Image (tube, rainbow, N blue to C red; front, top):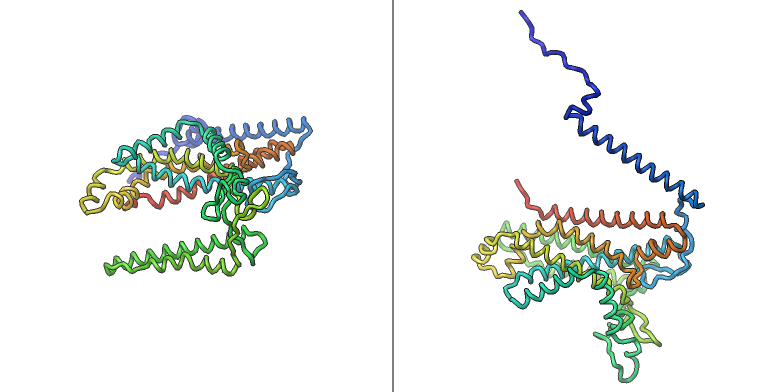
Length: 410
């Protein structure tokens, strides 16, 4: 009897790293990684050598030194004797404030304008087209300066609110629009849990987030009940109570009270002062980015088959209800990915705040701090790291939401 055996396999040869398709891609990646590491090491060594020749070292100790400059718009306590590190935190919070407010308003404007551009009303659709094309084709910096100039020149000075017959009056007896900004009522805490009011607001925000989560659970329970019995329970009063009562109880425990702005001397005191630079930057970023979002929304709606709308109309749904419940939920799968890019663009475009004197991260950490300390390399690295982390956080959060609205396949 004869036995059949496999022929002996050939051993590994170095030539296979280049000529064998099983190893070639891995070889190219390893070589590319080695070259990249060599390039980075050369850049670092060259930078250190040049800094040494200039009598400098690589050190972040400047963050603990007194800043010596003031910041006009701030969310936390700060004065000229605070450190450069705290000044950087103030600038970062200002950037986050503009980014959050801008993304929220730009989304609302973009959705409304995108839907109205598809309106059968000729005048409405043309007006939205003028808005979109006008803002998209003019540089953002010009809009920021223009809106800031309009706010400074067309609004009254605080002195106009003084006298027996003032030439200007407050809106709703608590809001004053002036050429120095807008003054609005503020909520203060008479018995704060913490010395810093920001922490009290953080507690309120956590409580509100918990209330929203509870409302979502209640809505899910109502949907399950409806599916089982065919009758959806009435939950609007429970929803209202869950959203309002916890926050109201917290306000009462913290001794919250309303602080209204009032004219004292040559300016308003009390309340919250929203400077003209903040308002101009916020409006310009929102209007500019909203024009791009409008085109994204319009494209997403047009990507949904007309048969979906016709089927909804055949069931008796009105156009507004059809857009809300049928078209937009399907269009979200097309809208969300490019929407992420617009949010990132708005966040990075906020660095143009220096044009109107708004003190964001670019103006503090990447501007005055660098000029005073001479630590341009360290400052720019920290500034770049901040924008990188912020962009990754926004992208990650939006990608999670994008995954949740994707079409679920079997």
